[in-house]
Length: 282
Ligand SMILES: Nc1ncnc2c1ncn2[C@@H]1O[C@H](COP(=O)(O)OP(=O)(O)OP(=O)(O)O)[C@@H](O)[C@H]1O
Ligand SMILES: O=P(O)(O)OC[C@H]1O[C@H](OP(=O)(O)OP(=O)(O)O)[C@H](O)[C@@H]1O
Ligand SMILES: [Mg+2]
Image (cartoon, rainbow, N blue to C red):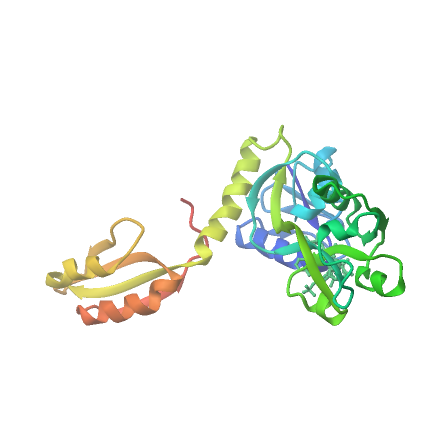
């Protein structure tokens, strides 16, 4: 089974890190090598540009791929979105010079010019809006185009908004919300190995906001301890050799840890340990 992964840029490191955390360790992959075996002899990683990965999956060069939803929408290929991998979150927006009052709404672009790295997404957006525009495709530095009279506005990626602000552009409309996803083809989505990889990646993401709590408590405080411990079924309770206390283990939301520990101490728990969880296979 071949999985296409971004070979460079902002998506490369988080993609490789996620595979490693999911246990799909890469082996023998030299830095410039565009493929790598993994610890699973049935899973090979192919490295490609984020923009090319939709075609890699659609054409069968890879069975699944990790890339931005914006890249798949721009490629206009029909893929199965298996899972949001919760990074590379950004928006495609229509933006125009902040000091140009003639283009402050989508309709103002009627008969106007829009520069973008995403001509297909842009064309479809304006078609849906019933606005006729002239689209100019550029390969980067899109934010400059309205200031050198190449376009009246742009459709481009934004996440912090810094680049738009620095280039005195303001958002007129949101075109697409995007993040990095695990994509498959219709004919590969249900394959056993694809399901295994999807589950492994999901188990890492499920565990990220959970913590494992371990503590000791007097047996007669157990009911109060159970009251305090939220979520995931009942806690695990174990006898401690040579002690009247019991050991209690539970999985809790990371956001609840601070308050839960205070409550546990108040009902008599002691020696409370908090650890991260590598993977949580539901
Ligand atoms: N500023 C950003 N914030 C969040 N995600 C982004 C941002 N820019 C790009 N992305 C996501 O990363 C994907 C790849 O981005 P892009 O094609 O710009 O390559 P890159 O990884 O930024 O490398 P480079 O731009 O240097 O070629 C985009 O399709 C989008 O999904
Ligand atoms: O909202 P911000 O946080 O400012 O991010 C938006 C910028 O990020 C991307 O550029 P990138 O840095 O990837 O360079 P690129 O244009 O070469 O892709 C995108 O093309 C925008 O220019
Ligand atoms: Mg970029």
